[in-house]
Length: 203
Image (cartoon, rainbow, N blue to C red; front, side, top):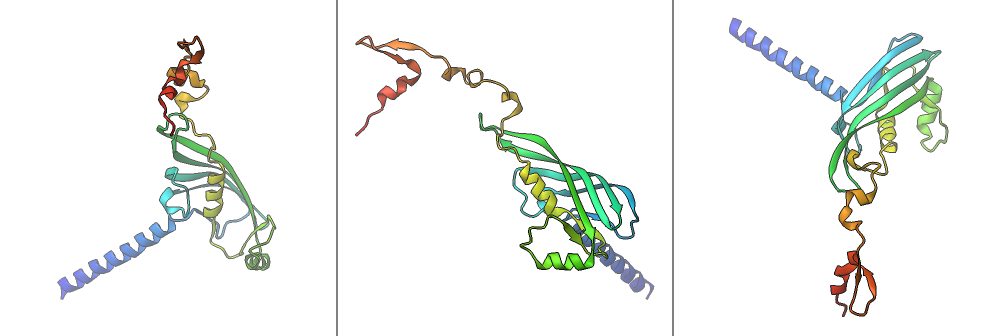
């Protein structure tokens, strides 16, 4: 009987640990800040998530996304000022080499806790209002969508590896920069860089 009881207790512990671990892992899938019970004041905030756990994040992002900043609470208004940090993989526009680079951007958002307005704004998905509302009994502020959008907006349009920046193209590809004037049989001149074009045949 004692052995059966011990085995049952161990089994029960494993189940509880599994459920707790599942809850923690699920919790890490979104980037949210705990706010339940917080009074007016200023609080440091730091949250992070693996890039694969953030839905619809572009493939350029790798590793983790981290937000570090402060949150001010005043009369049910939550104002967050922070910096977002991540790592990105890019293909160089000039050399087609793959390179990695840190990406950071500023982030700010203001939310008002108001049950009536939160209900109204959730019913009007096409609303042009820039105000953000949450319910007064919310335990967390979920910033996953806002962080993803901010990261996407800050992806660079030009993607040049550090070693090629502020370098003229002639220095990177000198073989295409040397201009050689060659004289043909009839003494006409042409740029030697285009000599291979002479062999092209057109039907």
